[in-house]
Structures are given as structure tokens and as C-alpha cells.
Image (cartoon, helix red, strand yellow):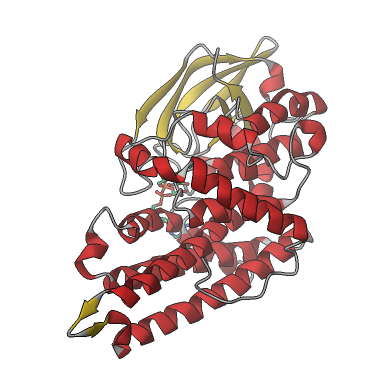
Length: 385
Ligand SMILES: Cc1cc2nc3c(=O)[nH]c(=O)nc-3n(C[C@H](O)[C@H](O)[C@H](O)COP(=O)(O)OP(=O)(O)OC[C@H]3O[C@@H](n4cnc5c(N)ncnc54)[C@H](O)[C@@H]3O)c2cc1C
């Protein structure tokens, strides 16, 4: 799927080219044939996780000693891109491998890393991160979920909503207040293994505009008793700093998906307008079509170059919050615009479910909302002015 011709990024090493090819083949053979059914059923099979684990598509950037593939963020980016190019945007693998696992790797104790990372890499554990609540999304300091000290451990109470992987997840990082009087300094992260967690309950799999087979859900914690080792790391009150440190990578992951979807939309549309006819000629032969696609291709090219630049900087550990926020905001905005313009060129077929561009139009919308809304991205960028 090469709708644009940008040279390979400097960070795209030979082993990443091999990974790209392996991931593409595996996804095409194992996942793509089931996408329609999963979308119909509103949830993809649990076995996707173990199959992805067997194929090395989970935790590729985790060290080998913890069950990962010993790669870098570039490995995650290559896999995420292939998932998006194949149209499986509902899969929460990028969150599991690129967000949940890094929290444990970067802040967990040695014992916590050994306990959780290998099982995340195989798909035995499915990860989720529960920040948002019915009353607090952008303003994370406003979370009301509490973790009260009790004996040697904690008692967790609260409710979370919009949680990706909410039905399949059995390892959930929960944002909770350990001291409600301290504001940001009273926020801590807890790792909750849900299989035997008394008082934990999954709510509805939420009905939503797009990402039909994604199990975005409500979660409830009623007097859930947690051992002391559930606190991520060893010190309370570190949650907010940990979140702020990790969020740039989450934003970059969203940007990777945005650019992949832009390229997919463009490729599908170019293909379509070369076949469809009106007024005795192909749709591509109208100058309007050519101009629309020329503009989209130009913007897709700029998008890819900027994304590759950001990934390169992230790999060198020099990607700052401002630039990561720019990537998330600008690339997801562009995704919405390009997919909309592409859909228009499909005419009525673009509105029909059986044409992927229709689903992409719905799936694209949330990209401007989650992982920090695009307005919050602008707030962060504005701080650098
Ligand atoms: C499909 C899906 C999956 C998600 N997955 C997860 C997940 O896995 N884990 C998780 O924790 N959350 C998840 N979320 C939640 C998501 O991160 C939040 O919806 C998002 O952060 C916005 O929070 P909110 O919905 O409470 O909106 P609000 O914070 O209520 O915002 C409402 C509007 O006000 C604007 N606004 C708010 N503050 C400001 C400001 N300071 N300046 C200007 N404008 C502002 C916002 O931009 C928005 O337009 C998911 C959401 C969706 C839809």
C-alpha cells in the first residue's frame, strides 16, 4: 500500500523491514478474514491476543529478559502501522504494548516487571489503562477513584469509563488518589490483576460511533482489596509525574495510526476512482478528482515526513511534549480531513458499510478525542510560546 513515495526513514533498519513484512503477512492471514464478523459481533475474539503474542506482535519493545522481543519504539510503530493499514484499528494492541507495558518497565520494581511483563508478552494478560471517569477526562487531577491504606495494602473504590480493552483486560493500571488533599501529588498508579479481584466489575461494552469491534467499557471497583505490591513502583504520589512522562509516547502511537489511515484512505480511493466511471470517463479523469487527490497526497507526504521525524527523535529520547502534542493534534486533524475528502470521491458507495472508507470515516473521529483531546494538545503547545 504505497500511495505516497517517501524514502524509508533513517531509523527503519533491515530487521524492521523484515518485521514489517512478517507482520503484514500474519495480519492478512490471521486477522483480516475475521474483521467483518468481529465488527458485526461488536467485539473481536479473545484469541486475537494469544495469537498476536505467539506471532511476536505484543511487547516488541520490551527487553527479552521480560519476555519481549528486545526491540525499540520503532518495532511498536511498525506493528501499529501494519494493524492500521489492514483496517484493524479496533485492536488495542498498541495500548497494551506501547502504553501499559512501558509503565511497568519504566516504573515497576524488579519483582513487578518479572510478574507482569512476560505474561503481557504472551497475551495471557491483556492490558488496559483506566484514567478517565464519568466526571473527569481531560482534567485528570479531578479523578475521584480512591486507594485508601488498609493494613498492609489498599482498598480501591471508584468507577472508570471509556476504557479501551475493557472487556478482555485482566491487568488494569488504575489511576487513583492516595491522598485527595494533595492534588497532583496525591495521585498514584495501581496495577490490578482482575481475575481474582473481589469487588471488580465490568460494566457495559459501550455502543459508539466507530471502532465497532473495540471493547471500550465502563469498569467498577467496589472495595477491591489490593496488596501493597499493587502500587506501581514503591512510592505513593508519583502517578501524575508518571502519566505526564509517558503520555508523549501514547500521543505518538495515535499519530502513527493517523498517518497509516491517511495512506490507506488514499490508496483505496486512487484505486476506486481509476475504476468507476461517470459521463463516459473514469472518475480520475475529472480535474476535480485529480486536484483533490493531489492535495491529499501532498498532505499525506508532509504527514509521513513529520511523523518519521518525530519517531526518530523519540528513539533518540529527544521528543519533547510540545512536538509530540503537535504530531497528535495535527496528524489526527489531517486524518479526519483526508478521509472525508476521499469518502466524497466514492459517492454513495462511500456511505455504505461494505466499503472500508465508510468505516474509516467513523473510526477516524475518535482520534481527535482520546489520548488527550486536540484542544488539550493546543494547550500544551501554547505553553511553549
Ligand atoms: C473510544 C475511546 C477510547 C478511550 N480509551 C481510553 C482508555 O483506554 N483509558 C482512559 O483512561 N480513557 C480513555 N478514553 C477517554 C478519553 O481519553 C477522554 O474521553 C478524553 O481525554 C476527553 O475527556 P472527556 O471525555 O471527559 O471530555 P472533557 O474533558 O469533558 O472535554 C469536553 C470538551 O472540553 C474541552 N476541554 C476540556 N478542557 C479544556 C481546556 N483546558 N481547554 C480547552 N478545551 C478544553 C475538550 O477538548 C472537549 O472538547 C477513551 C475515549 C474513547 C472515546
